[in-house]
Amino acid sequence: MTTNHPLNKQEMTVLAGALVCGIIHYLLFYNKEWGLSYPLFTLCFYLYYYWSVKGSQEWRLRSWLLLLPIGLLSLTYAVFTNKLFIVLNTLVIPCLIIVHTTWMMRRKDTRWFDLSIVWAALDQIFVHSIRYVPLPVQSIVRMVSSKIKIKRSQQVWKVMAGVTLSLPLLLLVGSLLASADTMFDRTLSKFPTLFEDIHLGSLAFKAGWIVVITVALFVYVWGLLYPKTRMTSNVQPSLTGEAGEGWDPGYPVPYAKPLRMDATIMATILILLNAVYVLFAIVQFSYFFAGGSAVLPDGVTYAEYARRGFAELVVVTMINFSLLMITLHVVDRSIRPMDRFLRVLLAMLVGCTGVMLCSAFFRLSMYELAYGYTVTRVLVHAFMLFLVLLFAIALYKLWNDSFRLLQPYAIAAISAYIVLNYIQVDAVVASNNMQRYETTGKIDVAYLGSLSLEVVPYLLELQQKYPELQQTTEVLQGMKERLEADKPASWTEYNWSKRRAIEALNLSK
Image (cartoon, rainbow, N blue to C red; front, top):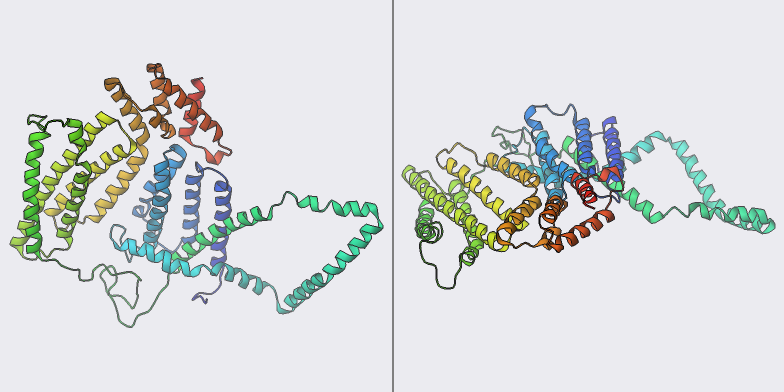
């Protein structure tokens, strides 16, 4: 592969920085649990990134804002132990970092709150960066070849040939001398023991670990610095809407003419759906929100009534949200009277959807009172509240066409996800189940023991208040054994929740 830029000092310094990061990554993560190491390496990456691209972009306060959610999510590895968010954050944090760094370098071509940022991020990984994978090896080879002159390289090859030819002679002479002298034979026999502690497989894996991380960081940052350019014969508009100079950004221009749907078709759909939704809302107010003033069918309890249809209501809500987005962005609303009519129908749709979300929310609450709280049910509660926020933002969009939905939606999604990480969902589940036990006398202690270490203080409180629950002692003993088996072997594995649980359990002995 040929590059369009010469070998220079910058190329080698960026590669050297990537190597340092690769070594740090190995020291922080190899054969260790993730803890304080994750935010430390995130900081290390950004120091490497800013050091590598300095002078290539203008620094603005707005460009630093996305560092806040990235930093907060990275800290969760050193603060909490919820397995679900540990797994999710391994996907979310790298995606946010890619979006952030891509937007930093492509600010003139894209906006982070526009769909074009998704294409830009994918384009950065699979087009601009991946083509530089062979570059580290090429750079090292060129550097070595430039340092070694032709005559000197010939001498090196001659030395290597001499070493190869001498190996059979060394083996023959060594065996003869060992046979001739016993002490010399004992001396030679000690040489293999010097390498007993060296495992070639493990050494190769460690070296491969460092090489993979080094190459990945280098090609990504180098792809940001030197993106692939392709000159086109026709001048195309840039992503900013201005005339370009033959630059093909590699991802779709968001201002292309969109597909339009007929307004009459959508109006008909909305009228029929709203009629059904209004009828549903009337039934909800008579049976559900009225506190049971209407009579339920024989043999049906309110817990069973609440349980039925919850998932269906959530699905219908998602359908309504999709129809709302399609109407706002796909339907042709160029005719003013039809546009106003569609706005009214959408407002009715949002109102009826609000009734559905309230119904689903209360159904789930009643079901939890009957059967207990779980992480899944609490997350569904949070998701419904998030949907309410999205619909509220969309309702504002109905009467303000200039308002862009993607930016507040992105901010709302990132903020909501950070809040979910920090409210300690497992602790919320434990607290609510304890309150439920005080009123119903029912609690699943074994389930609480399967949650993260954030529930330890609540289990200790449960043990002190209700010593008759012998299962609590068994669950706490199991947590003690788990903590003793998972004691941090390095300061990089430090986790605040784990440390707090260890101290609390030690005090409870």
